[in-house]
Length: 483
Image 1: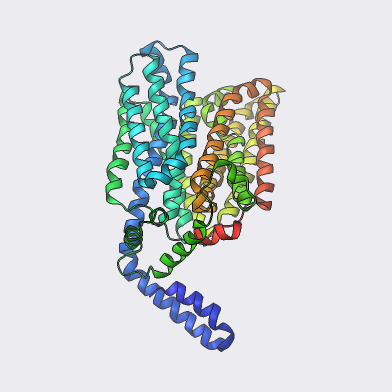
Image 2: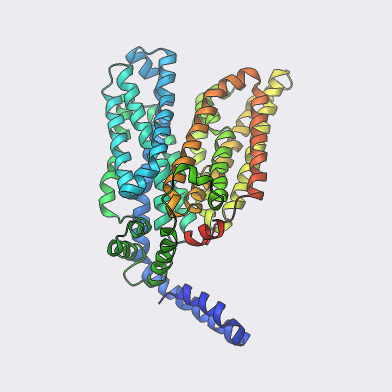
């Protein structure tokens, strides 16, 4: 028996005709019965949901290792292969180009061969990239490997949050989807720390391991039920949903909701990129693109890519500051995951953007003090405090929430096209910020962080006016309300 649905039907259909004491008695009975059934049946269903999420976020960890690889390996690669600074800079940044290509194709691949198929493709590209880097004798193979890894990152950045959102129960969707960001930052931190004690070739081999876990783990988990329903595989759709919800769970209402929603979508034409700008999708596109713009143009990749330079400019030991930065991301991102389905998406975005503003202002103040030789002894500590405030605030909300909301707001008929577009915007913003950061710092170090603070202030206004709260609602309810 679906207790939650019975309660909703009872409250909505019978409330006016029954006495209030009887309603309260029935509610108590329902909650007790639901709690007992949850204890009896949730083990099997939650195991498969958690296993499926774990396999998917192995891709997120692989994503993080790709991002983090260039930071600790610069001296080793440049000395072993005789690379110039400009050649290594190309090696570090060319992954973003591959990721943009991956973003462009991610929606079509994910819609045509499924969510699991797209993750398989991404794992294969990442493995090929790592092997090309490991066997490199010069810049050409390094570049090829980095582009392949970047392409895999572009696919993973879209398909992982979408897959998790489509398999998770609505009351757990936000927290499970946040594990995507948690595993990315874990991969980055792990690669940076391990990269300080092993050679760059060994680190490349280590990067293959999560790709293999993803590749083989996909054989153990079901495909996204919503994708199976969309492509007409009705039997497989119900089998997959049954695996995810447990053999004793009543899935009839969820099956009916998904099928009813898909029937509505069948009357809509196949989407093209220009279709996203139709009135019916305008709110969803504005929310998805806007959050990605504010996530990237708030300065995160400028700070993370050039963290050592920031600390050195402020007179703080760069190695110590970078390790602290790497370690603080993991527990705070985990905190954000636990709060996602409790506090909601919008409160986390408000807190995160506010903290980003404070962090930017602290760093800007420290550089202003250094430029004008005011209390110079306070500059390193103020810079460290501002950077830690910045990364902590980003990790708790602005890092993960935009990806969660992106996976929730688009209807299935445009999800692939819209997801590709939104992911492309994200990677383009990443490239712009990482490319312009050093130029901005040369112009004005404190002005750079004041600019980022202004962007994060605009993010608060954007969330307040445009972004809906999606906590506790099914994907179909979210998309129907927005489109």
